[in-house]
Length: 392
Image (cartoon, rainbow, N blue to C red; front, side, top):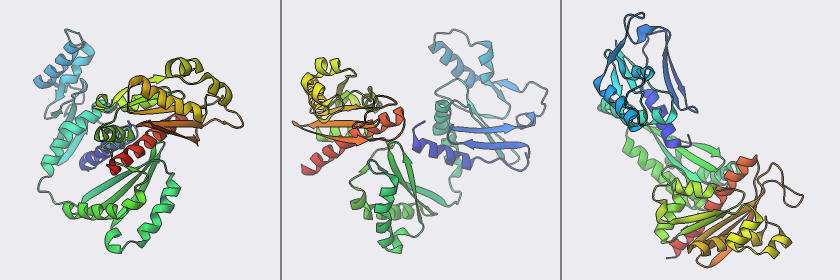
């Protein structure tokens, strides 16, 4: 799952859930990449006194939830193999699963807390974000503990090493009162680099204030690459920037094959600013659907500045949008040449009657090139929209 904040919350929840030494054969495991929090038992005594007996007790609430979900899927009865999902060990607390049929379970004995969760990632997410965290938060009230606070700054368009070379001198020049006790981690991926600032303090309010002051002191250094998004997705930031600027958008994609449109429409509320797009994969489609010059295609090739500009302008005009994005490139593994190797991508951005284009050469395999190209296109438009906002 692409959701970094959710993943962190999983780990926080796991850290609060302990298995005591009174059950030495229990194994508690956290697998962050698979988004699985699993607690396994080497003995059935984990969930009942009689390993050979029938530990299942019908829980009416769980049964109703399971039956309702199967009815919604058009099935009048619950299949026999699924009925075990509402057989709950005695003494267990049911953690509702709003995304599936298998509930989570919380059991306690002799000061030990055991949480059992289904392994389907989005079902696990729903249980952790819902009943489990609510329960743990309620029980933590009044318990003194050192708080760990994070502040994440999202950047794109600058490699990790260059970002560090830019940022570290500024950090070194800041007074110790701003940086002491705050750790910085660089978290790169295909779409950019997140900066995670971390501090530990029993006083959460004071810790937040310290993080705020530090990030504010770095604003001028980070501004060219920073963007604000709740989930860390530049598409979200772009949709919000379009809304604030009162602009609409259409996209023309060739090598990215609809990836930019997909990312935009993943954002709730995108329909207010995103009008549509065209996947102009062939030269014939570029000419027929978006008015790209056949002469320019012949002279410069599909992967060129004139074509990227015409794609961006053409799609905006076709949809009546204020802004247009045009992407054309060589995603690989074949199709490259000496002057246009694999990874070469031209991106055009049209906004309020003006268009410009730039070329990038992205490393990696086909999917990496496509992902980086989509991110670069969104970043280019986002920067122009921010400039519009600053100018008004």
